[in-house]
Amino acid sequence: MRRNTNMTSSELKIEARQALKENFLQKLLLLIVPLLFSVLNDRATKFSSDNLNHEVQTSVSGVSNATDTVAAIDWGVVLYTIVPIVLIAMLISFIISIFIEVFQTAAMFNYLDIFRDEKEEINLSEDIFRAFKEGYFWKIVGLTLSISLIMLILLFIPIIGWVLMVYFGLSWSQATYVLYDKLKNDDYQGIWDVLNTSKELMVGYKFRYFLFLLTFIGWFFLDAITFGLSRIWSKPFMTMSMVSFYEARIQDRL
Image 1: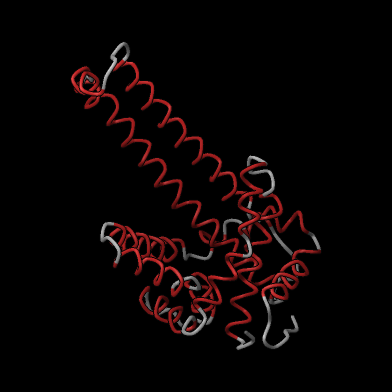
Image 2: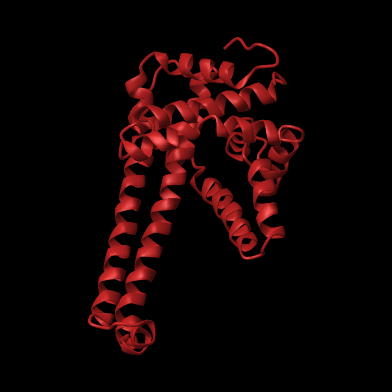
């Protein structure tokens, strides 16, 4: 795809729309699995939350003040009923999140090929499950868990940790695309090499990328008020737009 120099956010989005224009339904279906898993994850979270609220309300029903509320809680119920529900829900949510990331990453790899005009036709049965078929499932999981673990640790470090979360979040924002290119070029040298390459790509471009992300804030509000229905367009559009940013960056077109 032909690129302009010094591309603006609007131009990046235009190229994303152009890349989605033909056979949009098939390109949407490449994201159908992570979309469905996201709905399932939301349901599991809501189910555990509803059960937790029900158990707590049952324990404190008829209690009029905060002191009596603490005293009235049946801590045996909390230990043997509520805690297992929360732990099971967290485990299910974690597993679902891993699979969401794997299928989402596979879709991003496909979108990169589409954007580069390297995919002549879409084979849904092959392309959706390419992370498993092409043997990079564990590399995706390893990258995802490494970033998630670092972010979780930083979350519990006030101020400095939160600042570092933002810094690393922006620095490593291109890691998925870097992973694909390294795997494709047989140049994969481990997770830290992928993260460092992404960090190098984003030197001087972190704030630009942050502003680019802000241009999608309206879509998140639209997703909320349409109960997720707008994701049918917003998910492919935002995914392809991120691909457009990466391509512009590696071609030094920003």
